Image (cartoon, rainbow, N blue to C red; front, top):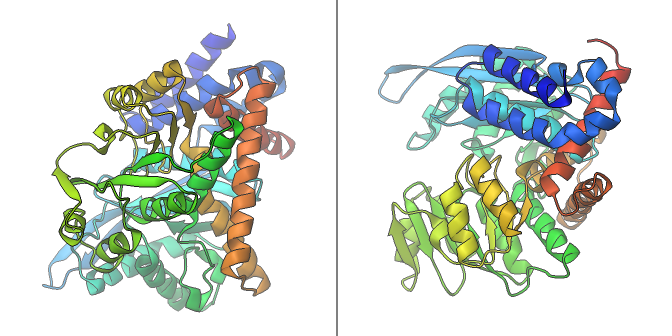
Length: 447
């Protein structure tokens, strides 16, 4: 059987064993397509069936989450935790609360997390979790009751040496606080390192909230510098207006770029003077309002309902919302409007067709598993501080984050060159992450 046939057989097996989980299939195909050259150099990994083993989670947990709303009505949601790979350390990955969450989404995110975490160079494995619960429009007390019910089951599967969840879409400081409180109540242990993304008052780390957005921009600056360029003076468009997007916008502006548009599920706003981050924070973090409120607060800005932000001309695009948000058609529009770089702040936000368009047009493309690794890197730094009962300053924490992102860029860049694909950050990220995990799995035996 040829190498191509072997890879197709593995992918066919994944699809057969995990029917209907399209996002997961997409993530596996992307990695398998990239790592073929690495397998050619390391036949021992194929002999040990590392590929087959790495595609199968070590553990998948699905559970019922019953809770009561403010009117006394009972609701039942479904919770998930996929503990995917612990070759490099305890499972590490966020929790997503969103109606779209199902097992396939959680597995795709967990699979990506394996390689993302490996790229950081830190001792953390890959996992992911969440629930099909929508916190949008719910009161604080309703969110608290849901989180307490969710943790009442999840607590038995996690621990600072086993599995360390964090936040993701729909899970911010409020939700992490309720989850941590319930974990402490059930276990009778103040185990700070069991959750990351905590508040600063009870074991949280400086820069954790900003880390994913900041990290993606640090990566973007490194990628442009490698081409003799930089963000200074660049016209930038960001999708989303949540945690990742807000702090990506903030850091772009610190590097001298101008973010002219951002979005949410209702549409996008254009502000040619540059998005005012403080106004955006007030609307999204305090008022929890829609993006159209930005245009009401900044009268010169324009709200465009029901349209895609990628139609706004830019030089640098930062997809910071959700998976598969940049289609082939969106990519073609970005290229036609002069985009020279795309840096994924979200997890797998670009479709395979979109990636193909960018590649053929010579647009520099940074995949999420590399560019958005700042969040999990800062989580690992939070774990370090919790373990040592320490607390670092914002400046020191940001310096650590920037160095980690520079190191990730270097690993991707150098690995792509080593394997004869200079400038291919997708291949560099997948190969480098895979090799680190594969070697650990090989030496730990058949487990």
